[in-house]
Amino acid sequence: MDTLENFRLHVFRAVAEQMSFRKAAEVLHLSQPAVSQQIRALEQQLATRLFDRAGAEGHGTQIALTQAGSLLLVYAYQSAETLEQAARALAALEQSVTGELKLGVSTTVAQYVLPRILGAFLRQYPHVRLSLISGNTESIAEAVAEQRVDLGIIEGPAMRRGLRTERLVADEIVLITGPQHSWHTPKNKDVTPADLLAVPLILRERGSGSRRVVERSLKAAGLPLRSLQVIMELDSTEAIISGVEAGLGVGFVSRSAVGKVLRLGTVRIVPVLGLKVLRDFSFLYLSGSERSALAVAFQSFARTAVTTPTL
Image (tube, rainbow, N blue to C red; front, side):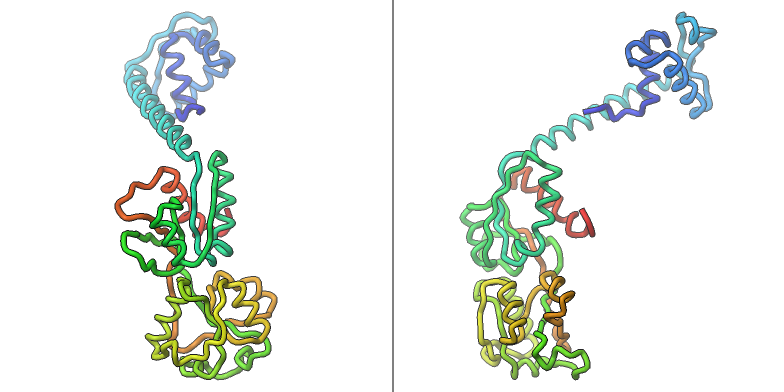
């Protein structure tokens, strides 16, 4: 790793150690005028003389440190040592981000959130090997509990003891309609929770984190699941979107999943008065277990990536 030290201080230390501009230039593989220029620039920056040199720059004769130069040299050595320690620590960190990372990721996250994160992560840490399994939140929680994966990312509450969650990013689940539906036209009256009783509804399968979050929000709005016309349960967000586009019913999906179809105009988000379905995409791991340096590095990277517009 290249030195982190300020270049002028690096040159200053070389001249002080050699007590010669000419010898310092040889050690640094620079011309003697370049060395002299750096020292003059440092003296101008500090507004003090660092060397008594009386013609030494041109003739290569011995020089001496001034009192200010001697004082600066002490701090220059301290600074160089501190920066060398930092360089070693950074190199050790970089070397620790190697090996295989096994991820278990719930379906929506795997399809709509994770791809750009993984690409950027592998560009920064090319020595990492990633393996990934996807499924609903329940199956990912099971994989984490059984230690078949190092780290999970889920889209709903983990219904298991012994697991811990940490928030990755907030998400909103929205109601969408297809172009054939009467709610698709923005001029229609406001949709209320009670209006959901009269429409065919497409939901994710049981065990899905999205399903649990939607059920809880509907129940809080006075709509238990048994009161709704659930005509279909599907195992992916993409399947729900396709069903809505085909006019089979309305459905609840992650806002992060509908950007493309909104631009195409094949679905529309329909606000429901008084109903806000919010949840977190969260990391999931065993409570009390020590995560690997690789898992911790990925968590840190992913948190930064999801708040960055472009990587």
